Length: 396
Image 1: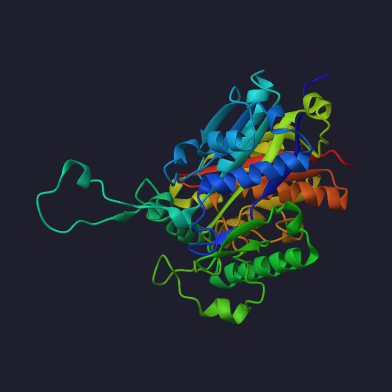
Image 2 (image 1 turned 180 degrees about the vertical axis):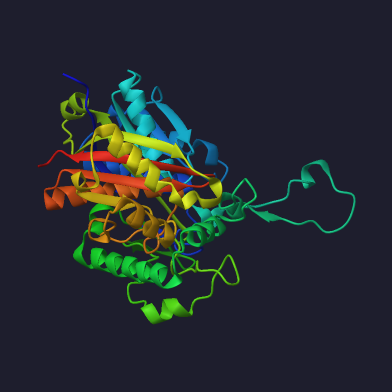
């Protein structure tokens, strides 16, 4: 029988708004919390996991380059287990799933934890001249968080590339704002229904100097925001632009994991496979309009698997900017009635290392709840790439 790569369970922290509830918690602590909750949700022991793959764009804290290894040993994975850190920009979380699968498919493991996260609130300010000394005068510190959002080919911050996409294809501000308010309303409904709670492992966070509180929900959604309010927001990246805080993804903090494994190995440990990782595609696109990435990535996945748009029951397409979703909707013919039904990056927030994991959890739970078969998770990526991942419901 051909080897099946499956996802057994997953959990994430609530996503914290930039500079708010998670800002004082090291990223490795968030990762440890999500990894422990994931192993418990799967019903396996940490010692059953032989590999951990961690997706991250911006390392923070002294242990920032070793977060996967730290989290793995913290939850009780064996010292003989292995850890790997990956960065594929906004697709880093999904890349962690793919890389974990590749480790298993090539015989280098049987059960892995695949995850990722960011704590942008802890991103440092950097001066590259001070190490070797300066002669005189004031010194400028650069924001490492801005580095994470900067296009390396001179097109400015990623929001500028979204403006370019809107200009090239004549997408309008009103339509982008419409998507933004829809995302907020959908996230609000997903919170109220308890849908998002299924993927969240509540975490204790500091409250004042001596107290803590239990953080149970994402901090960024604003489901009560009105269309009129969004219309008053000023463009961020160009004076006469269309991209505003209301139609762009939120800067947020958080961590997430899923169990990825060989089906026989997962079942042997008593865990229940929930979805099958069917296939994936990764493509390059022009960096100046990187937001077009999901379109050719999804088209390549359809072609590779002999599928068409209607064969896919549900799509999660990352809301890096609303224009990304407008473009995918127009070019792919994929309606918003089957896309991002529970909010997205605009409402829940977008910590790149964790986003692909969150989207996978959302798609997986949607398929199970609706008894549907296929879902695609897709995103654009800074510097000009697109990614698409196909999963199949194993609970039908």
